[in-house]
Length: 249
Length: 249
Image 1 (tube, rainbow over the protein chains, first blue to last red):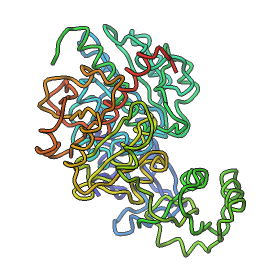
Image 2: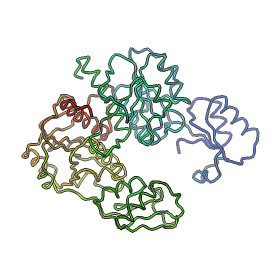
Image 3: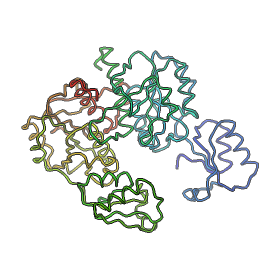
Image 4: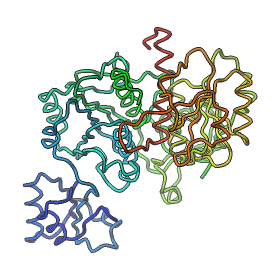
């Protein structure tokens, strides 16, 4: 249970110290209001941390812990602020964005490939997407410590900011005309967006993309795992970079 | 838990493929009707497959599985005999061999990509490698029903037979000189071998390879997931085939 902080005082302490990434706070529905609870909600609001009132039954899994109806979900790794990432000095930055990748194994696996490929960051929304927990860390084989991980509240506004900062936005989309290898990924900042396995990329994000690419499917069976799909696209960019530089690695 | 298929999509996939023995389908009593559920019941009726509505309590034993209240009881996946596979009439055959891929999620995921890429078979040894169980089936999202699965006792002798039958043997090896995209995969039968994440391909098999290829790693962090690695190589072959045929798909 590395990734939970239980109880009012502990959660207040955590919120005040501001040194770990809190993905969300859950509060038991019907909890009697008191000063501490109000403080938790107040700080959470100020810091833009999600808090949710959850039915009592959902706390059963935590019954061995003195949670007092208050549990914070914390990340074992440190997230990078988006603005800090932007300020980093590098000629071309390469980013993977996951929009709705809920399976922590897949997120971990994508991070792992991104690190091997020398990517600079993985960006993901704080809702409807896995966040960094112990499973992600394990699936990444420790790769979470080798890349900037950026959790954002609004993916849409981050995509706008990326565009303002000379990033090309490349969306993977099953209905795209271009295949993933039809794009030239060299000599530019880019962000590749992977959508959820079930629904793909959300329509608001998809509209903002500069390019849409697909992975061609050679049979009737149209169902690539999202981490495998990400790896295929990521490594096309690696290949192009190596071939352009004439560096055989 | 070798003989159950869990979840609506997997059961629909199974029913549509119609090549395995389904002894019955159990559905959770009180399950909310939806299109998928209706489809399952409709196909089951047409094919004369028994389906039963069962109280929720009976599903407790399957609580570790994402069954969505729908479980099919099936006979184990049908393996293909290697000799039957060889006799199949096709101009060029493409094969993935796993040598020591013990994680069933990875094996399932490799099978899934192989099917999407239009490969013909996945060959794996009966020892020191995952074999097809419920986890593999689920990770493959039903892909196990769309490709020849060949389980063999001696990988070494199968590799010899493949060579005798005009297959080129391509081994992924971290110490290889060539990158995976340096090989021309067009107009030939080939088998790509993926080794275990920990030890790679066993030395006896590696010695028999016609080509050794590696996936270039751009950082100090040298640890691609084997299913992702397989996907990267598999899709390089797809890309070359499409580009050669001038078919944009």
